[in-house]
Length: 318
Ligand SMILES: [Zn+2]
Image 1 (cartoon, protein in one colour):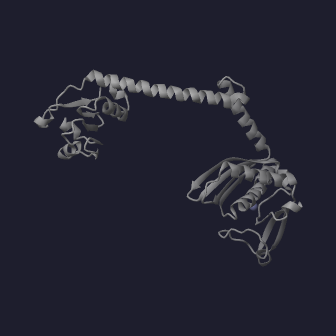
Image 2 (spheres, rainbow, N blue to C red):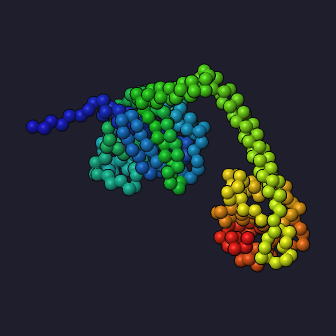
Image 3 (cartoon, rainbow, N blue to C red):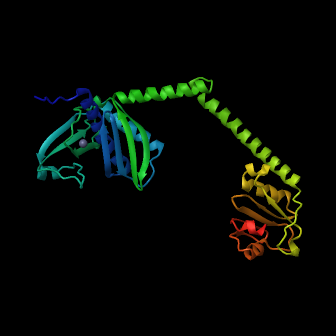
C-alpha cells in the first residue's frame, strides 16, 4: 500500500518562507500604508511577493523592510493559528483577499509582538497554509531582488533560513573572484574601481579626440574637390562624398558629419553612405539646403544651411 510521506526538511523550508511572507506583507503594509497583494509564490526558503505599488521602491526602503522583518524574527514571536466560523472571523482585522473563496470555517494566523513598543504592529491573515510556530524559526530573511513586473505591480524576492547564509556565501565568492581578477584585496575594491573608471574615462576622451583627428585627416585628404553634375549649373562648386568603402565608413556617420561641418564650413557638400543616410550642407549662403532637398523629393529634416535624412532617392541626386 502506498504510504504518504512528508519531506520534513522541505516542509520546514516552506514553512519558514511562508511565515516570512506574512511578515513581509505586514511590513509592506506599514511602509506603504496598506498594500494589496497581487500574487505570491512560496518555495523552500524562497518567496516571491507581487503587490500593487505606484512608486518605485528604493534601496533604502528595501533595507527598512529587511530590518523590520528581521526584528520580528529575532523577537521570537509566537505564530498563533485559530479556526473559527466566517462570521466571527469577519469581525477580526484579518486580511482577506477578495478574489479568494473562503469556506465556512476559516483559519486565522496571527503574529503579534508582545514587546510593548511593537504592540501596534501585528499581522493577522486568513490562511490554511502551514507555518512555523515561532518567528525565530525563520532564522533570517534577505531580499535578493526587487523589480517592477507590470504597471503598478512590484515584486520582491527573498530567501529565508539556510538560504540566507548560502546567498551571503555566494555574494562573498563573487566579491573574492572580482577582487582576484582586478588584482586587489576585497576591501580595496572601491578604490580600485575608482582608478579603473577614471582611467577608462580618460581613455574614452583620448579615443574620441583621436577618432575626431582621424576623421578630419580623411576629410582633408579627400579635398572634397568634385562637382555635382546634373543639378544645374549653379551647383558646380558642390562636393559629393560617398563614405562607403572609404576609411570613413568605419566611423559613426554623425561624427563624420560633425567633423565635415567644422572642417568644411566654407563649402557646399553632400555626404552619404550605402545605408542612404545623407547630409547636405551649404557653406555658401546663396543657396538653401532645404529648398534643394524639397526639389529632389528627399525625406529630410533640418534648416536652410543643413539638412539630413535617410532616403534611397539620394542615389539619384548624386
Ligand atoms: Zn498564508
